[in-house]
Image 1 (cartoon, rainbow, N blue to C red):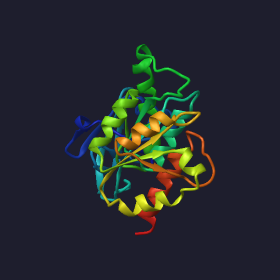
Image 2 (cartoon, rainbow, N blue to C red):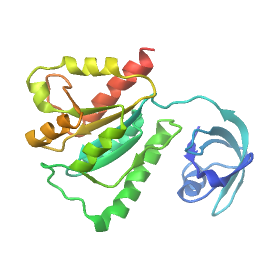
Image 3 (tube, rainbow, N blue to C red):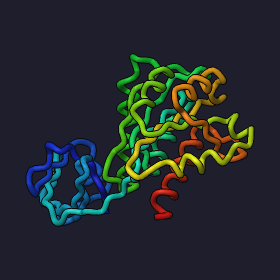
Image 4 (cartoon, rainbow, N blue to C red):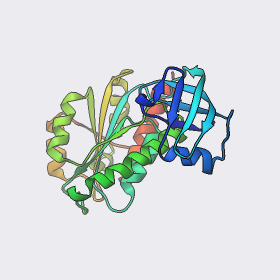
Length: 250
């Protein structure tokens, strides 16, 4: 059944009004008609199965058939901060990270970042990023859409860590030193419903100076095994481990 995130203000009792691009998707792409069922979510934890009772050029009207109580959210609040990287690597982090349960994302300006964050293009980029996470959240049947922020400075990331229960630095030098037990150790320290900040470097990894500052700020260096992963692969590895540990083993 197709899922659509709808702004909370568009819910009125047992009625919902769908507008925007989702109208075209419902009417033109999915070719739905009256009496067809869809799932609508308010991005605040509510999800319900709705029956379509009117489709016009600009909106779709539907009535609640039954509320849905199942939660599909990872039982941790996980933020991924990823060094600015070339091409569509960050978009891959957004899409796959959303599917795997991340709660929020931020690119950051790392010492080894090749690309720059242009403020004049920020709004356009953020709109595209939000579209990616919305579609990924719908596809993976999540009840919440992750947030995406503008690029942070490295110092802002260090400051951000103070508000989290734990902070991990995915550090390739830890992997090269064969210090692989630290991931298991940090997992055992985490508890359900806590918050975790994960920092991943860009192509070329994290510089020694950044690693030293991050560890001084409370980040724990984490190895993801003996192989060195790409910047877009590392977050997927960590989120998969978290899902297995907190969802599949319980």
